[in-house]
Length: 187
Image 1 (cartoon, rainbow, N blue to C red):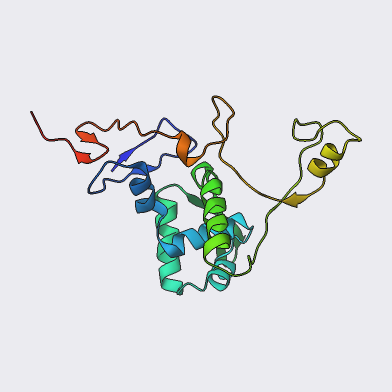
Image 2: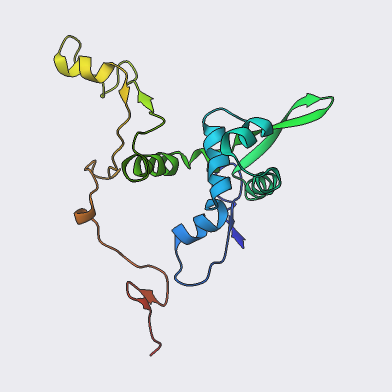
């Protein structure tokens, strides 16, 4: 494993994965196991103590303990003591862990659409006062945007501000020795 020590508050190891060099494969190597993602979900929800995480994930205790240790080792969570006698810890997301928020929202949105009949959780959003999201006061547009509403995320390009859709993307393979079809044969 290599590390990205020049980024963020904690270095996160870069796992070596077989096959195509891919950030998604490397990320899944670190956080892509079911109990790991469900533990992260619970910490996002504010359930930081081990007993809460066990109860709310349904994970076997030994597996969950192993996943939380692994997430701590790779810098996704960190433990903070909340009791000295007996010594007990709660889990907090690091910067790397908090950066998983869009991933968790995307998984939940996909699950709401394809994996359940009725979404069991809804995220609510309220625009901050004075932001571009809240339009001129007194207009119907402003009332719709200032009221709390179900979160409906979309991907936008930070450079141009346009919504990103499947037809607007191309692939620029930058890994040496690889193209879209796979490994490039040597000369």
